[in-house]
Length: 326
Image (cartoon, rainbow, N blue to C red; front, side, top):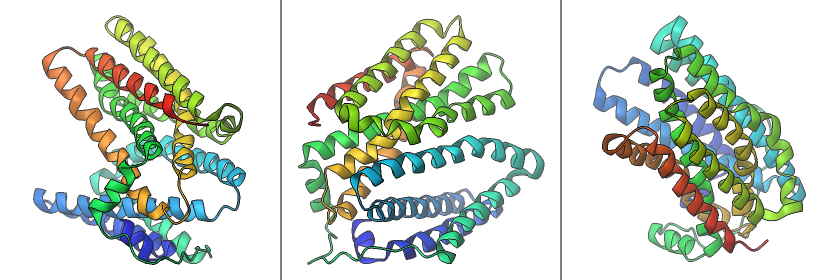
């Protein structure tokens, strides 16, 4: 992604990637081949990754001051989580009433609307004059790993994705085993996003008062305690665990918006396209680890061991925040 982001206009990338993802979603709903389905979904995922990377860099460059960027990041996070709140509801309704094809046609249509919005409305893009394009993948990764604070920002982002990966994958399984209906599970997953939608545009303001180190440390320690309490109550009181997870969403309303803020605060404006794609891999890596590692624990141990593994991981990430300055 770095050479693509550096070489091409972000607005054009947003439009092209949205159209490509939209076509991929619709095509996926009509294919019966497993191999072709995987190829189409890979294309869709790559398009969405390019779309989001271009969006974040364009969003960062469109703000004039640190205060503006901080405030607008909270607003962007709130709207993003509104989508995660509404999405499961719309998806459930589309799947129930129109089936598999209707679900992915709806997904493609909404993605297409996003591309048309960018196409029809004027968004200014910043012209950055570079001596060369950063096309060496190994050099880009070495550059990223050479910075202590960029490594820390990766871990903080990874922690957020680990949390959501476990919650969205394994909590529905526990709820099904506990006798909850599919509709209740969908409603609960939507409710986990409500605190983020309601509070993210406010929580970003705490950075100026308390700094990144305190917010990262306290929130991840809080999530670690929630994991510990969930470990002791899962067997007898699943409802208590669900309430604890909703409380954890409050911590996420602080963490989610400031991870990008911390990342960009450690870069110059010419380094953003070079570093952001590496940083953004924390999302799929965290999501993958959140399925593989707890999945192994389910096979080897028992259900609630997941919370111990997640808690240990989050506590380790909390300790990494100690090295942050400011």
